[in-house]
Amino acid sequence: MMNKWILGISLAAMSVAAPVNAGDAAAGQTKAAVCAGCHGADGNSMVPTFPSLAGQHPEYIVKQLSEFKAGDRYDPSMSPMAMPLSEEDMHDLAAYFSAQSRKGGEAAADKIDLGERLYRGGNAAKGLVACTACHGPTGAGIASAKYPSIAGQSAVYIEKQLKDFAAGNRANDPNRMMREIAAKMSADEMAAVAQYMQGLY
Image 1: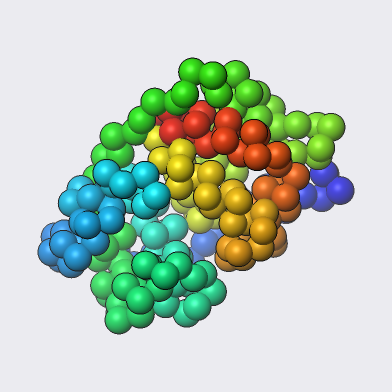
Image 2: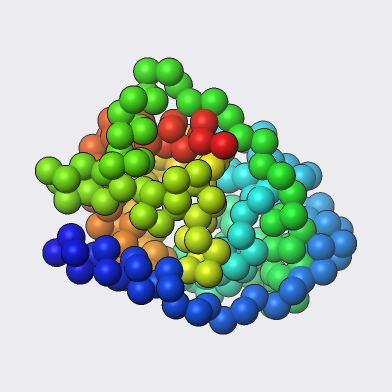
């Protein structure tokens, strides 16, 4: 089972993704004014429940906006915001936010050891794959496979996404990968790996 899962990750990462249209970052900056309240003017959110978009892969941003608009992913704040967006709007926003630098944060000292073990080595006893398989050793993700950059992301936001995946409240992950991973994690493991990712930059 583990080998089949790892093979699936490898095939997805090696696949040639459809190229994302090159958006207009200058136009995206203007359009991003409405996003600033939640995500920050430069994509660095000051509210831990909202993700920082600075430095995120444009492919991933476009994917999430498209899925919010289509209803494949739901959030009471984001879904209404995505509904009026055109494809051009999405690419422009993605171009702007991806060009910004994420500021990152610090991990809680008491979570680092467990968080690092899970992130880099997983938990073989549970069949839990290391986070590095998709998000890389530095948390940069894999743009071509639309695996997000998570380095420096808010721990509060990451932990909520893990809980949502585990509960099936978020289901826009390819091949159920994140749902299967999160379902194997304890609350302590989610908190620890979220803190570690917050400080990984």
